[in-house]
Length: 336
Ligand SMILES: C[S@@+](CC[C@H](N)C(=O)[O-])C[C@H]1O[C@@H](n2cnc3c(N)ncnc32)[C@H](O)[C@@H]1O
Image (cartoon, rainbow, N blue to C red; front, side):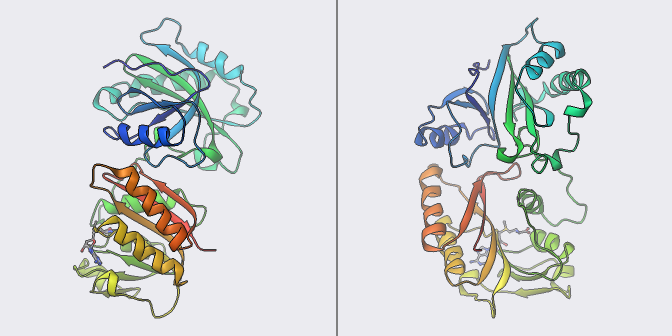
């Protein structure tokens, strides 16, 4: 399937393949006039004030080229980048839609961006994307899709992710009991603060223990709440207390620092539980994974947001389908 070209000045969004209708709906509800361009790619006229939950990355389109195109070269891209009134440092990235046909284009996209990098003055380039936000940098991305190349830009501070196309790849630790640990690491990556030594974390729906293990590795103390069993070495860990009961029956003895939740349970009931923690002042920071197995996901998310902010008093709410999320989204928030 060929990809439709986005217009310069509009926004290009990429999402998990199959989630285009949900992203499209969010953009339509935000009056951003979406258009489906191809697999995992949606265009809109503007970036909505509330980041779309189902977008992995968004960028303002600088130019697009049909492929194959004799006009597409590293020189042409360098001229386009040089023509931008960009005072800030640049981070150059390449991505493709996360689809089988998109992935075959990755080597070509990487090679073009590498060639582009060699044509731009080194002092304008920031190599370490991890520093992009504090350095006030812009992400300049080349997206190669079947039949189309798009060059776009977004301020790192406003970007949904610092990873190319929002695909935050990481290696699964050999001793990780579940894929879930990567969801937690990706969620913590996006936060300006993280749980540290001596802090107390409650982990609701903790078994078999992927999240608890990552929190313990950061030096935190963890109260792991789950009727199911934890990995034996975690259950016996001196900084882990396993409460083998339902999260709906649990209350902390005193306020804690962080609430984590990855419970496989109905989203509205989970949201109400998280709202109770916020309202009662039991915790300061929240990271929760909300399962969305239903067809109509956006109406549910509207209700989840409302419950967390209006009933729970949670602030700075982010709701995002991260790279490691499947039929689910990750929520972060704070009370301070
Ligand atoms: C996706 S798994 C959690 C994986 C975990 N975060 C990890 O990293 O290993 C979902 C868990 O939710 C738990 N769960 C479901 N209902 C629960 C409830 N009412 N209270 C506590 N845990 C619950 C299940 O027992 C299951 O272990």
